[in-house]
Image 1 (spheres, one colour):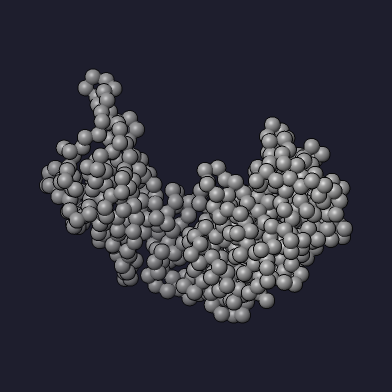
Image 2 (tube, rainbow, N blue to C red):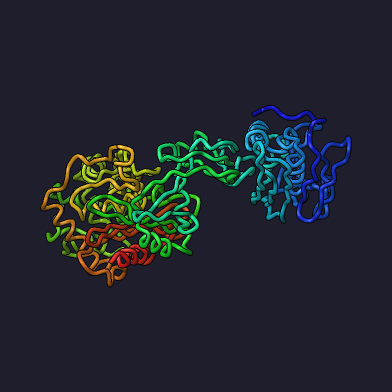
Length: 556
């Protein structure tokens, strides 16, 4: 990875272009930056301070000339094959040299033309046009990327802020680009009716299909082709990010793999999140755990399966089951819902500081009263909610085997105020739509069924199980709470027209730095359960609610 061509062996290429002005390379002078956007190195006028006699340290905001000069130096060297020169133009020469060497040696990219666009502050977009060659096969490669110029620590010189994403936007630090025979054969994923699932038809399934190939490619019966792929590094693998194919040079023979996805419901889910880049939704069959649809409005990360977000008041479904089991609440009995309740040094309140006087627990659940739950914190052990989530709902055990990478929820043991906050889905509690759809499914079916996208019979894997179920009385009350919320509580407007045996719970979760909270909604109807989140969507009843309800209506 650290080898490079000697200067005499470098191939001749055109100079990199910054905007519409070509950079000039002068023989014997190295890679000099000349007039670009009206100035070169001589025009760099960033503020300077003296750190010692004769030593100047540049400081202050970068000038336009400094940005364009640093970008030109890097792109010109990279394009010409001067790996050491390009690496030296960054603030992390060692990492840049390794990645850029791999771009040529491992990814087999050649004949590159790098063309920069108009800088926006310190950021410079650029396009890449090149060829990827493997033995007798070659194909063109084209994509857009961007770099950011910063002042280097120590001397303040402008340098490219190095990250692997500069080389290709799909790369995370530690990842590599490799061209060769794919270690994993392609997979032709099928829906439950036997039709092929493609990212072109179902845009949300791109990351899902990548995950299916990674897990099942070798056992699905296919043969590998030659591809340019992103091979994930240690940090990406820890985050359960799958390898990704960027360019197929020669086709492999795909194996076939049947999934549980329903084509009509998947299409409906795609439609619901279309145009909503921060929306995600999952639909399950409650009695089995089969995943019938999954969709994300944003591309590139499967928030529906791998998101780790505070679920807000949808977590009250789990908390309510615990309080009922511990005889700390009962659906039709009086239950406190004050404006405020303090615990562990924090003062908690309800949305708009409302209170319910002489109300029942059902009324508090339906209106999503925070203090009705927080007020019970003094009577709880620190691990009560954690145990309830694991033992009854199968959450926070990190052992789900869905068929693709998932985050299985987190309900850590906490104390004092964070423990109280966890009762209403804040604190350290983290979930995604898959987890919360499973919560609704557990209430509807009466027991936990681990969600899955590929039947366990395909590979003989064992599905996760919960150690116990709720009592009949607790289950009946919990269904009553969710049914009442869907009919007359905060979920009523969204659930209008859903009909049948339905239940729901809304939620909103405050996130530091966001003007609006994340909006959540989980619901069931008949044997179906669904959940969705709209990040920065505000109240769940208005953001995620209509998405989830529309899916349940589509399911008939």
